[in-house]
Length: 289
View (cartoon, rainbow, N blue to C red):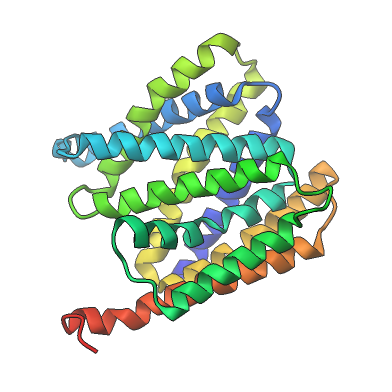
C-alpha cells in the first residue's frame, strides 16, 4: 500500500508540474522558469541538508562530472518545458518514456554495460513505440516531437552520469549540485527576455519548483519500498492521467495511437527492468553463469 501512495504522490506531482509549465508557456520565458525552478529547489535542498546536520553533503570530488551531467539535464528540462507548450500533454509524457531506452544505449557505449537479447528487444519495442506515436511521414510528425525526443536523450545522458555519481555521492549532494549548476545557466540565458512575474505567475512558478522536488522524492521512496518493475508500471499511469487533464482543461483530443505507442515503450521498459533483476543473482555470484 505504501508504494501506491508514494506513486500517487509522484503522479500528481508530475501532472501539476506539467500544468504549471503549460500555464507559464508563452507568458514567462522557459529559461526564466528553469531559473526559478533551480532557485526554489536550491533553497529547499539547502535547508534539508542543514536540518540533518550533514554539511559534508555540500562537498564533492567530482565537480566536472556534476557540471557535465547538469548541462545535459538542463537541456532535457528545456526541451520538456518547451514541448509542454507545443504538444498535447499526453504526447510529451509518452515520448518521455523513451528515456530508459536511450539510457540503455548510452550505458552500453560509455559504461561498457553489455547488451543482452532482452535489452536489444527492449530497445526495439521503445523505437516501435516512438514510431507509432510520432508517425513519420504524416503531418503530425513535426519539430516539437523531435524537441521532446532530444530532451529524452539529454535526460538519458544525465541518468547515466547519475549512475556514475551514485558510487561516490549522496542523492542529496546530486540534487544540490543539480540546482547549483543550473541556477546561473538559467539566469544568464533568461536575461535577454526577463520579465517580472505577476502574482498568479509566481504561484505557478512556486508550484513547478515544489512539484519537481516532490516528484523526485516520491519516486525515490517508492523505489525503496518495492521492485522497480512495479514502480515502472505504476509510473505509466501518469500517461492516462495527464491525458484526462489535457482533455478536460485544454480540450486536447484523446489519441488511441499514442496510448498504443506508449504501451509498447512500457513493455520495453519492463523487459529491461526484469533483465536487470535476472542479472542480479549472477552479479552476486561474481558474474558467473
